[in-house]
Image 1 (spheres, rainbow, N blue to C red):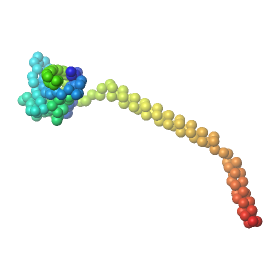
Image 2 (image 1 turned 90 degrees about the vertical axis):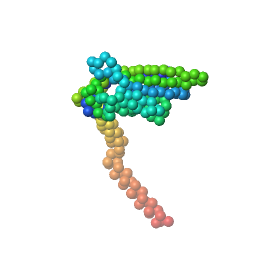
Image 3 (image 1 turned 120 degrees about the vertical axis):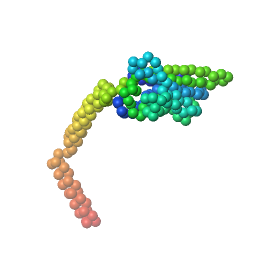
Length: 198
């Protein structure tokens, strides 16, 4: 009745804020539900997970004492008893925050006559780096953007040149234009003479 999507691995910059994303979407939004979330952490090389955060709409958040105290906070759904966003926020990433995380969901779905309970867990690995590294996708997208700008500029220049040639070809030669002006002035003089004769 529910599905969680979360990144399987990601990097955070040392000393910078970072959001650990976890989304728990319900397949049938019309079904009433109540949910709560727990986050667990296992440092690199440690075999056991420890609970670092618990959040419920009634009680709010609880953060375990230790390296996450005053750093980790709930950053997911608020103002509803059915949590869809289970994300948490690290105000400043430290070296001791690198490791494996588990985002847990417990949801009670209320149907006519009975309640259905489900639990889902999803894990992710967080690596802490000194500087942000650009991934291949951002580099490729930036190159494609510059290529597109050059192509559009060349296309615009070609269109302007084409339009200029079309306008120049359609314009009358200068001699015929002067003859037209002379004929127009003569016709005006004749009209004046006719009116004077009347």
